[in-house]
Image (cartoon, rainbow, N blue to C red; front, side, top):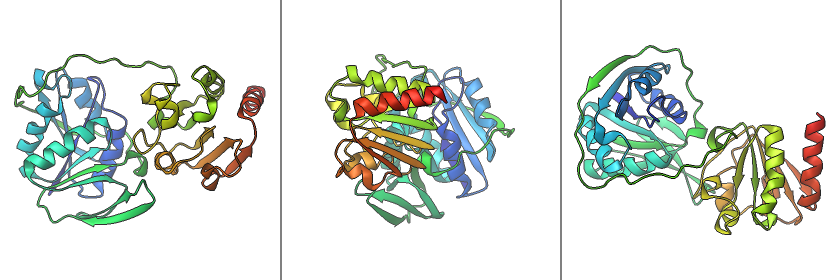
Length: 311
């Protein structure tokens, strides 16, 4: 049967991880539909239609979907679900909010953060903060799956899927949108950055993160942090990389002053090259690092920034 990908978007374009979700969906079935629910979402629907592998886009126009409230979007997905064998979403803040509600309303289990598709009913997902992999099989008629975007190569654009207008279900009255405080940065978004520079408790203060900002700016990198640094108030929580933060897999990950707790490693250990800078030579981060520098980060990072600038 056909696979439905639920696509989050900003009104103009679908999120980058939708291309990863479509890549996963094409491994389940060649017939992939994408649901774009929103208000004035025509441009977002067109961006979804341009993804290779997508055979149809369902555009649900309704004011109730303007702010992607899970309580309103989930009933729409449930209404469409009987026509599909799988409901697929990226395991981001939107997917983690909507998918469990859809699974509960359908009375089926959910496969969370799949990193590999073995067959249409069998998936591999991390457990114990990524220290073990579980192969799970679902016997449910409709399978609700969230996928970890970093483990599926995004499909390219260039497609030309048909766009079908469908009606909305309206607001359910279970929640209301109050507002959002969004952080703005000229640096690349963490989950899509090719280079990430992250700082931990070793930075000692938020003020000291400026030395990481200088390095990140020279490298054109995203700026991240460990949970310890976020909890200490050094940086906002949208910087957090780890099991309870964002999962990244850049070409280069530079961990500065991060000890390497398993919860942090779960969010970055799939990076292609890992560089660790820490004064403690016994720090667990060195067990996963490709390159390790033992020393004072307050001396090493400025020297590294200067070297990058010379290059």
